[in-house]
Image (tube, rainbow, N blue to C red; front, side):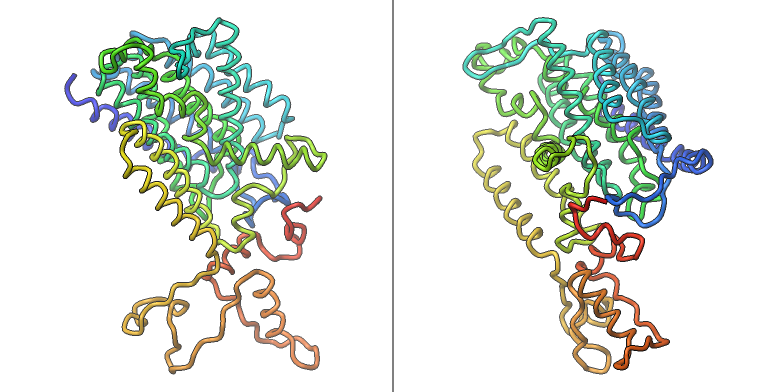
Length: 461
């Protein structure tokens, strides 16, 4: 078999390169066709930004599949399985629906119907869940209708979970890249560690998915030059779901008797791995939690579950004072902790140190969440090497004034400096200091007059 890692790495790099090179021309195309919707009340960007980034990502997907088909260690996936063709068919359909939505903003129910049709197309071509390993019972074979319904439900849930979390620059692409990296480690272990050939398609899907996200991220990091739009978020959600379906419903637990005695013992031995993949809630736990909370919140308020608002997790992080970049990094942290923690536990489920490390990192994440306005200060000897906002004293030895810790305080301080005691406006304006976590988190929403309806997450505007 040679060095299969090199083939996967080559496929990943080609996918990333094609996606990266196509994103620039796609951005110009999106501007030319007017795929730059006006800023809405729930948006956090301050300037109209083109969409249709999913076109470049779909190009990267096609390039990755073509390259893999011509590699010695990967061409067997296309010869022994029809799953790559099923993925391409479903991806093409969901991508087309996303492109139409990015340009014309089609109805949410139509998109939902398109997602179900795309999942059905993959089921017809063989990408479906055939059985499930259930603890205490063993392998349970599913009927055709049961497998179809479960597959469609998993695809729809994953697509909408990724779509819901796509609210900050680089957030969805980064979180899916982290999830696919953890997923790749698991599927590669099954394929080349235990020689289970049914895990080969999922290994290829995750490698290509990483390339799609890595190639798009340089254009999408804050401040983003282009958004992936629904054409990109639904596409990567479908690819992630296809990998989960392939490895969960296609891998026969009978093959695991080689290293786990009987079928029931094999099911128990692989339980820490299969439970996360039945419904990949641990791999995309943050988007899935955001999806559930959004549905509950909107239904509780008497709104449609598809009604857009500013109550998502990333919006909440901005409101409590985190900057745009800090909010994205916090979401990255939790996604990596949950995804890699689940994969690590599946490999060594009896190791206590894995649980302790996860608990320690979780405590660290909670501390980061509770300190949005914390500004680190450099020691005196290092003040000349750091920006002024991190210095304890100014150059003249005077203690600098306290920096505003929220958008309201920052805006109030600006108004006070602009107005004299007699109420007249002064000529000289004092700009707001940028770089403090509290100020950045507020100005990411923008305290302009035309964005006044964004002050509250539950605004009805």
